[in-house]
Image (cartoon, rainbow, N blue to C red; front, side, top):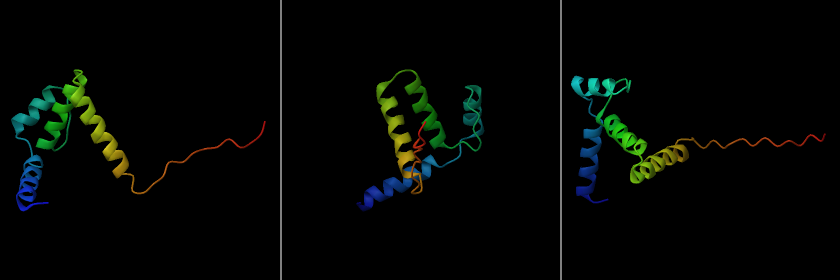
Length: 89
């Protein structure tokens, strides 16, 4: 990764992790989203969710991508258990 890309990445990460102001957090509550310690990342995800819920295909695809990325990366190496019915009737 180039130095400029690293700087951009760190800056964006820092901005997304900033807490929302009280007014911004209240706005999310007014819309029905109860979130503890909301950050800008939370607000971006809620905006993406709202677009997906409205039927915007690109938002749906992005949410699906984020969820499957989280599912595959966050399993900690655990494997799914498959139950086989090997008892004869």
